[in-house]
Length: 266
Ligand code: KIV
Image 1 (cartoon, rainbow, N blue to C red):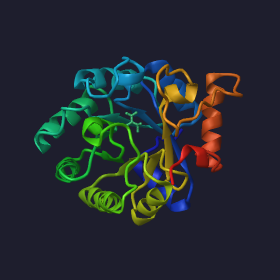
Image 2 (image 1 turned 90 degrees about the horizontal axis):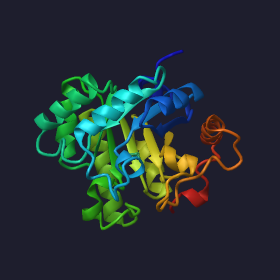
Image 3 (image 1 turned 90 degrees about the vertical axis):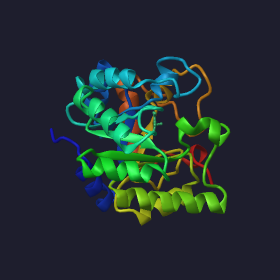
Image 4 (image 1 turned 45 degrees about the vertical axis):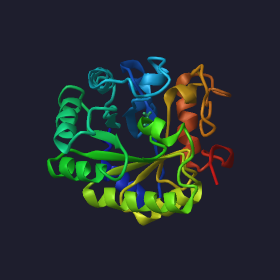
């Protein structure tokens, strides 16, 4: 079984082949997600909400991210393993981001680290990339900025905001990011950003034109008890097992059936 790397994802982008990602937080689900054929296993700081029951991702600590990443690393053979740098573990300086990333890689087993934001993060991505750390950037609805954004809202609907997102994406690519998550942005804008980059984009609530799709595992399973975003879909409906639901998600993404217009924003 060939290990998925960011090079694999880039080749898939070039061929117009969609790739798939799910968040995952423990060993058993990691093994299941991996054997079902998910390309990118994301240990998201969404664990603060779906695992720990907080109202946001802000309370998650670096130690918790390392713990969950190491559990997932034990179950993953094929997928690219991406882990979130949590709020407060990378914003002070590129050096702080480097130290936190090293811990996620050394003790968690992550292949790539993810951080949120453009602007000041461009310098951080450059610093990390220059030192051999593979970075996934995250633009649009960046949950670590929830208070500044005024809630979990679609981003890039205004012309100025859209322009900032396009410029941010190009700057992050130039700085060395290998993958870009686009969350809750209008489909047309996500398509424009995707076609303007040579690195792959991974969309959630960003329409069907991004190079890959990511979903929060608990949304796919339909088990999160609080509000679920409009862009999520419960794939357990009609499936006879968890593995069946994951495979249905993969099939729907690869065939262009997910996300449908009702999971996207215009
Ligand atoms: O934390 C997370 O799960 C994420 C995804 C929603 C992209 O960042």
